[in-house]
Length: 362
Image (cartoon, rainbow, N blue to C red; front, side, top):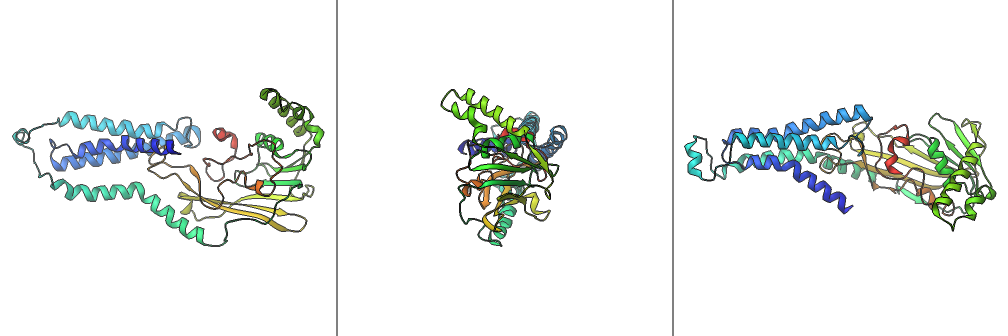
């Protein structure tokens, strides 16, 4: 986390140094200096938006991989390019007498603050307005119902069968289903596992303890051999899957439901919310609940770019951020390896269709 903030601060310094150098260059008339000052802020901002659009068209998002580094790079190149042009046009002159001889409209040194301070305030609001809006909306959201935002009534040691329904990504694709089989379907405490897919079908898997016989016998040997047998056994279980609709699927003992929370369109520019509910299907009892609120990266801290933000930050403003592991608070004994299917991290846009496109989270 410290490295992230250091990197963000360095990026901010690199981006804002050119306009500062322009503002303190006394060899240029004051009005022209202010024009160049604004140009070194506005033109790079436009460049990042254009770069963000291009990156989105090419790779479908501006997540921090692939072509995304071109977004901040467009700011740096345009800002420093403008400064180099400005410096060549208005070379530095050390002595005030030489400046006067060039017939420049020299202002008193204190005169600049009359204009620079309000311009700087406008700039700060431009770059930081999303911080104010984000936390104002979050303050209201976190204090509104339902409260508490997260709770666990009781734990279940031997659930038997579980149905996971993910409507945020939405659904479990093939890789996710294999990963969830490996993690949860131990054949002892969990013998039946049901998962929804992006098309709306429900995949049901069953296993007993013998299904993991080879990997269990080799857990103390070399890790690559253990993983090899684990993958083979997972695929063997997956090959025996049964596919149902949600109405025809067999009854499960427990349901883990992961849904988006509806927010106004304006809110989605700054915030995202989802909720997880774990239910005992036999009694209808709600065993656990978590509603989290996460924010987008701020304009001033976003490594992919200053102006074109599409990703969500991994920390929660309220609720339990770790949605991938929240169900473990109810089913604490039923994970074989410490890699839940949907790992917490940088979230895609709402309605993102496949986790295959965010493999950097795995």
